[in-house]
Image (cartoon, rainbow, N blue to C red):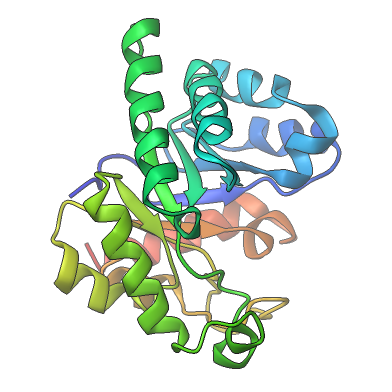
Length: 240
């Protein structure tokens, strides 16, 4: 199972790259990984990713590529050359797109002589519940739809999926122990849900089979982010 290294991925969801890098400078790459998403990437481009990699961080590039296969393939190759640890695409892009992404990552890593980043697929956003999903024309409940898309990603030889920790037990049972389950929507007990609809605590996520936990505001908006990260890591030590 892909569990080596820190389990917690701190979401650097800032528009200002200076704020993101200032927080990263207070973090220990041995204690967490970091995520760069759309807000930071659109505001500042790839440079923060390069700087985070240079600081020794494993970077999860969370841009959720979802386009025609050729476009996604080129985007995945470019992300590989940035030296990221993990990237993601949307499983809803379909089999041809997923296979193109897989081939592009493998080829780019080989050409650059660099480690091959993990390629994961988003299943159902953790901000969507069953009612919201039906509004998009999907009649399955969120858990059934997520498992269907996870099976597709697994069949296309992706390394894992991004999913709710509520769906992790069924995915772990269906897809085996070597498939990464990256779970956002993580909230320590007592933390605000914010815009997440399907949330669990860090301990519950690990118990459910998650391999990596994406944690944003409970750490980045905390009065003491380092203490908040340390508390989560300490709680996870009891579950591993």
